[in-house]
Length: 257
Image (tube, rainbow, N blue to C red; front, top):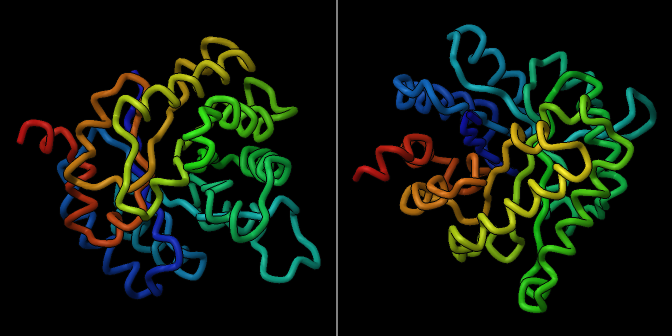
């Protein structure tokens, strides 16, 4: 049985002080949640502060980073090495988000290097894949997503990918208010699972968690979580307010309601 994972990608929002306040508010609202893993991914500048609160208050939240560079150290101005994140107690690292691919030129090859580096430092990658509206309308979704998965996991072994998380985020649904139907999202998630199974075997694909991201909010999370190949969500804007994010985490209550 795969444990659901709800991860909040705070993008370039929240100062360190604002991030601490959000984590404290969120932790109170989800204190009774035990069967869902919750991760928060603040900006780099807030990681230490959030890590300290999680440790001192013994919170069950997991800490995530939004990006990483693949080298151990060096003359790479503005970048952050995996061992720097590891030292802070980071559990998850988002890799290959569509915004990184679009605005900062990330490719399947650089995503692959980052995934390998994160795994080597005992953190868990959340590797993002997803198609554009043009690709969706041209019925190229499966081929494009397959290329992203295969490229992102090139030269890795089954053992290395044992803790891999993949996030399916259709580009046309991120921050637009549009969202894929649960059936559409599940079809692609099932395809991703099959691709990973072809690469690493049935055990890995059976245990791997696949998240959906793209205008996820309290009003629609329960529908996605009913789908058999969707194991959680990578949440953007709706994770920036504690009460809304808590409602997403408590998706079973939303379903009952």
